[in-house]
Image (cartoon, rainbow, N blue to C red; front, side, top):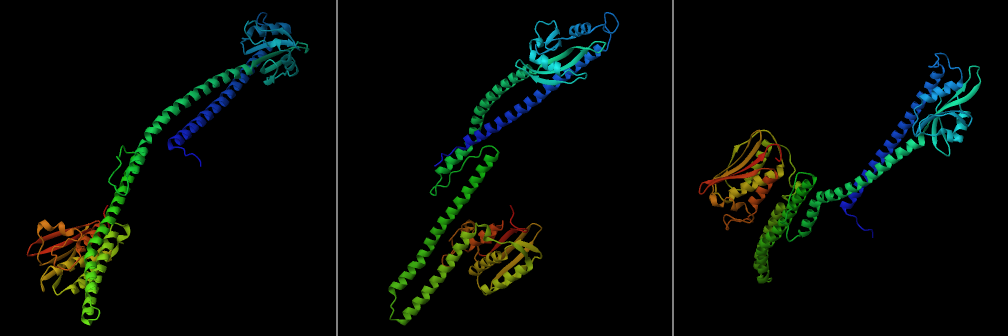
Length: 467
């Protein structure tokens, strides 16, 4: 099994490799450019000095004011004008025998390289042609011009040359120094990068350490967010994920607790009825069957309500569509009117299109209407209506029932809380209404006076869930 490499080591490897490649490419490019520059400079220098000799040969002798009387005078004057150096010099020679050389003591001694003099003699030309030759002594760039007497007889060759190898050696030394500096820079970059990458990845190490301590038994720990960079956003995202997981576990535990709590009573009743049932008594069997069916029906409604609440945090819990508010209001009112003998009235019908889930909204609206029927006397008024503003949708149910004390307004929204224990119900109705309203991005508003009735209003954003 291959050994795993840390992110820190991989990042450092990539960084060093990339930096080394950049330095290598930069060095090779600079070396090639400088090498070409040196060659061009050598060629231009040789061409200028050779052309100066040709111009001198066509000029007059400065001592007599007349054309040069002999080639000897020309070669002597040419050597006097040559400024020799350790890498550049000239020679007037016949074959491999030097006739005149510059007088500089520290100079390139062309006269000592017979192989070079023979090459220059063989390739002398009347025009300026820069050539290259490599001998056992040096790598030369040179130009050679034949020297002829006035009668046309060639008596020698004027050659000017540069030790290209020496100049390139200086360039090599420079780039050896560059390579040393580059290696040192890589080492420094490696040390700095190792420290910097370590500090940069520290939040990830913290993230790993914190997430290792988080378990299904304790999801409350959160990771501190530091800064505003990508890692900070990653930490925020992980914290949000932990929030969702914690809520999911909490909902799961609450569902299990609620189910076990609420189902225990009807199951106990069913067990008791079955234990005391006298199978030979038809009336007893019929009565027990009726009681058991009622308990099963109540358990089915309870399970449906619990499932609805369990789904309320999911994105697919609601499916908003463009809905005609007139049709929605009249349909909900017609269905609510069958819930009980009350003086049902439409308190208002708004016109317009809204973005809601019509099935869920109708479910919540009918739940409010059913609660109004439970807690109001026969033939009392129950009002239902809708109104619309540019930003809000309001749907309400108003009754003339017992009312709710102000101290109970928050309690009645909790799961399984019943305002009157003697009234049939699971205590989940208002909880489901709140879940549907919140899923739409809205809120449930309550106005109530004990003894005079209550008004529940669902306030929703008109154009879908607000963020």
